[in-house]
Length: 248
Image (cartoon, rainbow, N blue to C red):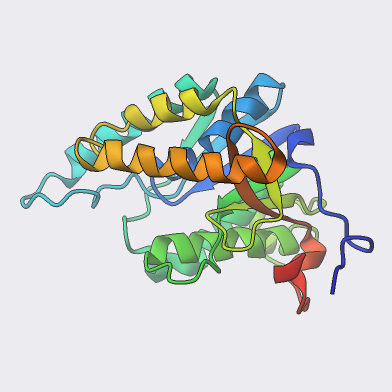
């Protein structure tokens, strides 16, 4: 069933203030770097909310988590600067363990949504099939819940003053309904990814960038442009008791 006539899909490129939630430093760049750069170009205020500083993001042994976390914070700040600049909020949740802190995380997500009053939020799609990283699933669900709970004054009263629900754009989605032309900003996406030196050193880094480039070219063909990024864009109406939302 096509619900687009009843529930139109919001236009992501009309966002004026975007809260971009990221489980770890680098996720926003991987999933949406070209789009974020284009939004900034067009006057959108972008605020990053990074749930963990990615202190477990290494295969090395030893107690270097604090040093790695500090390094990854610096890399994240530099990456957003490359995309065009904006505020970065770092939360101190432990990497890989968001599920243990799900209740507190949900309150924090809703609090920051109500405080900043965005018209759009962004997050990894928690319904991505085969997504094995618990932080991606937990944060994505928390952001979706924050969207539908934002207006209810008796829900999460400790999380601030209710506001109208923002729209949501999921990156890393298996069922995208929106493709954003990033032909003019894809090079900045790659440069921002290169700022995450602790994560994307050779050979993995160049392989990831080639993978992302090839997929961007494939997505671009769908809308007749050189490169595009895919999103599942939804309203709060799509996020509750809607059996057809995945098709919208």
